[in-house]
Image (tube, rainbow, N blue to C red; front, side):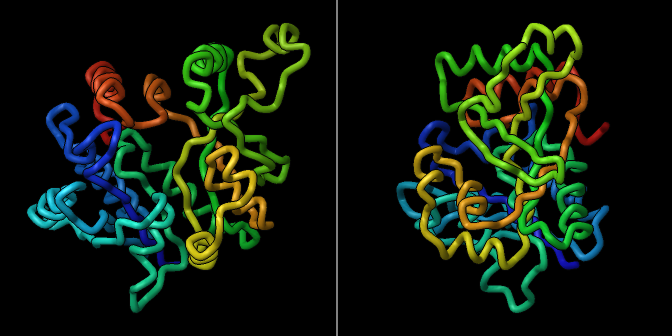
Length: 280
C-alpha cells in the first residue's frame, strides 16, 4: 500500500504571517513537522512525504517556503493559490503524479507536536479496515480538560471540535458544539475520571478516491454551517474511521498546534518543560 504524507504549508497566514518558518525552540515549525513525517516514513513501508505550498506571489511570499525546503532537500510541490483547504492542497499535490498513492495523509504544517504514532495508526487503520474511506484521530477528555474546553468556548465558541463515535469506531458526527449533551454529570464525575466527550484532532488519512471526491465536490449544507470539512464525507455517505490517541504527558495541553504567536509560546513552554517530542 503506497502512502504519501502531504504537509500543507502557507507563508501568508492572516493570523500569523510566516508561521511555517517561525522558530520554535531554535528550529522552524515546518522543519519539525517534516521530521515527524520522516519518522513515520521510517516505520511505514512504501511511504514518502512532500511539502505543499501555494503559488508564490508578492502578497503571500510562499517563495520563502520553497527556498527553505530546497535548501534542505525537502521535497516540495507548488499548488494553486485557489486551494480552499489543506485537503484541497493535499489533492493538488498528489493528483498529478504518474504513480498515485493508495493513501494520502494530510499532516498540517503548523502541527509540530503531532506524535508520529498518530500518523502510523491512521495509515494502518486504512490498511486493516477496507470499509473505511477516511481515518482521523480523537482523544478522550478527562473532566479537567472538558472544563478547560468549556471555559475556552465562552470566549471562543468555535475553538475546538468534538466528535461522537459509534461502537464500530465510525464517526457519527463532528461539531464545534460540545457533543453529546451530558445529563447526570455529577454522577458520571464521581464514577470515572474520564468524561464522555471526545475531542477531534485534525490529522487525516484518506483513500485516494475519497480525497478525489472531496476535491471535486461542493461544500455540504452542514459543512457550511459548522465550517468543518469532514462533514462533507459524512453527508455523502463516506465512512470515517476514528482512532483513539493519547499524547505524551504534558503535550495534551497544545493539541491544536500553532495558529497564533501566543500558541507558539505555549508550545515552546511545553517543549522546554517536557523535552523534544521525537525523543519519546
